[in-house]
Figure 1 (cartoon, rainbow, N blue to C red):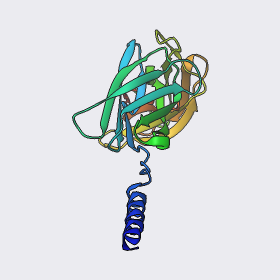
Figure 2 (tube, rainbow, N blue to C red):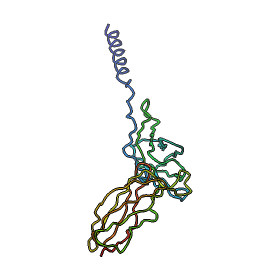
Figure 3 (cartoon, rainbow, N blue to C red):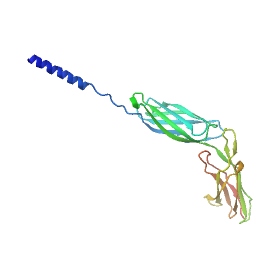
Figure 4 (cartoon, rainbow, N blue to C red):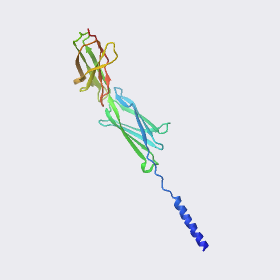
Length: 239
């Protein structure tokens, strides 16, 4: 009887021990993307055929691969890179080129990070935006006549030029607002005097009353498509 009871107790102990030894698999955490940086932060296209674009991504530990895709919301072009690990833990980096004929405006940024040992949570994404703009400049800016009698009219004029969609030439940019500034002789502050909208060929012209000697300048604040720019200053002598 004692032998039977001992055997039964031994069997129960083995069964209980076997139950304790079987553990549920651990639930792995999803990889995390903690930062995305694109250099330059705003890409300005000029007649130079291409410019280097660098993508840096910071991730949690255990990530095995990182990719980034940059695409214009409207028009053609795009950049796709497989990022490489750097010597800094969690920092990935890759570079490619933006061409001057790629579309300008808002671009979408789609970054993916993968941890192949994270089970069902092996991949994560982060999206954002990036800006590409066409270069602009002022041509033929002037304030005239000079010298001029006090109280008489002067005309401030010029042309706003912008890089065309092919990236090979500059053309007039119409329907853009230009701000006109004046800096009185002997002072350091530029004062806004008015605005004017560019016409066909990027031409603008506006008349002002001559009150004091000083310098005139035009400024373009830019848009999501066109980059900002400033003219040089042109002096007027008032007598």
